[in-house]
Figure 1 (cartoon, rainbow, N blue to C red):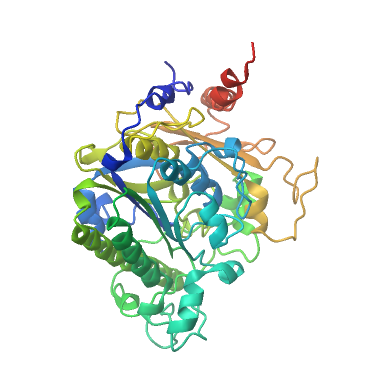
Figure 2 (figure 1 turned 90 degrees about the vertical axis):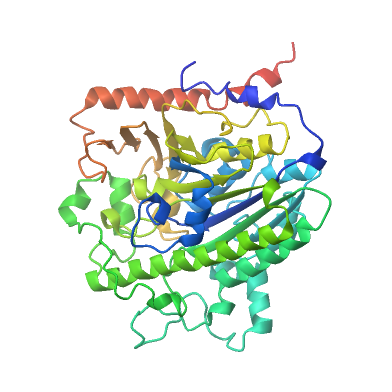
Length: 495
């Protein structure tokens, strides 16, 4: 059976549902814009992540996990539906979930699980009531950006409790304190501390009940801005972190037009001062270390409940962060720093620990959790359960460029038939094997990288390897033609 067939998941969908009273509990901890290389267990000897490393030591540590979209909402919906973005249709941020595909939490809720969400859920509309309508029994929201503060349970809590609630928690910094990104807000009132506190509270309450539980704990950090409170702000003051290679306009002009527009949008940052960039990296590391401490507290709380032996714990990310690699902050591109993410799965008695190097897609998380919980996997799911070995030969990713070129603004209106800001076909696709990666931008060329000999993705072989490009374009065509076949064909025949 070739890699393009999506029939393999039907084997998982025939699982017999077990009584929910014996179902395994599930705790998913998600970070936002967490790079694969920013974890001690993944080989970073500079970053301090003792609690995540402790979790990794008892987990299956997946070293080749790729998201289906390098932007928040499409990626998160793929995690929760087990489907590719062009199938579930949430292609850009702040687009309403259409409800055509069953969501993970709704399936578990229907099977008798108690379900909860804390922190950044990122559905639209971003209200508590809407989140509950998607299958969550208990919800505490904070999406982490000003436009959603009106819906934020964290913001309301902070107004009631923080003596300095007038401070803007996103980016107000203290000057003359060494790290220019030292936050004015006290640590205990940060979104990170609140998300950890609410996660532990909800975990206690759900674990005390008779029903099995599914808890999604989602932190906004280490997403920019890079503000970080004391004492974490000073943890890396004396550490020299290797910085990305500096790029110039000659390099930027060598990239396909959509990628050029990404790098040069607004006020281009590819020439960011190197001293300031060092502080950004130190603060990013500090944000991860602060998250690590919260993970330790959550794991300790889980142990106190007595449910750790029957609770699967997953730690993962919705995408990575360029951190000025290739001249760009943020994500939205197909470089490894954006699409390859850490993923840890500790599953007592059901999944062996150790390093797993096979190619994995983020859509594999949903069917894995459903199988753990004894709940049948819908036939529409395109992922594969990781409880059995995966035989993927390649992984796929996709992104619509208008949203990331405009950053959600209105400066470059979309014109049907003409595209946006000169980009006629902004829907880009990626296919990656163990060695090769093709990024294809219809009408704007592409990128081909030999990851074995060029892991940094600096030598674009798109024009010099036409045969390889043709083969990988064929793989993209087969994927687009077959990904949705189970949903589109069999169940709709009448005679």
